[in-house]
Length: 173
Image (cartoon, rainbow, N blue to C red; front, side, top):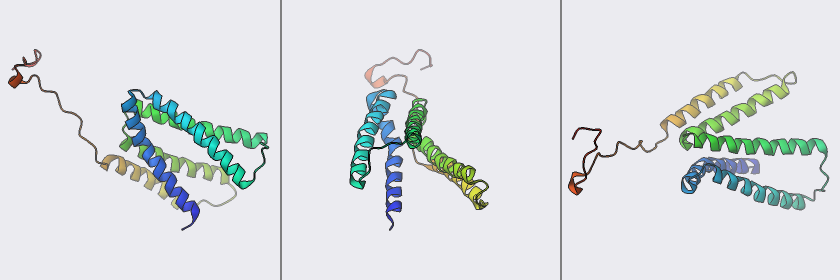
C-alpha cells in the first residue's frame, strides 16, 4: 500500500473521531468554547512541533518567502475557521452523526470544485465528476439519516406516587 493512502486513511480516522470527541468534550466542560481553546493549543503544539521536526528531518532552510508564507497562514486560518464553525454547529444543537457527514461530504465537494475552477481551460473535466458529487451529497444524507443514535429523552414523570411526591399542578392526576 502506498504511503499517501495510509496517511489519507489515518487522516480520515483522526478527523472522523474529531466530531464525537469534540461533542463529548463540550459536554464534560459544559462549554462549547473551552474545547475550541484546547483545539487551538493542540494545533499550536502539534503544528509547530511537527513542522519543526519535519523541516529538520528534511533538511529545510528557515527561509519563508512571502507568497508561500501568506498562503500557509491562510490555509491555517481556514482550518481554524473550520474548527470554529464546527464548534458553532455543535453549540447550536448539531449532533456529530449529522454534522460530520455534511462537513466531510461538503469538504470533498468543495475541494473538487476548486480543482475544477483552477484547471478550467487547461484540461477537460470528466462529467462523471458531477455524478460523484451528487453521490457524495446522497451518501452524506444517508449516513446522517441512518446512523444509529439515542432517542430523545421522553417527558419526565409528573411525580412518583411511591415516594409521596405530589403530581404536577399543570397536568391532571
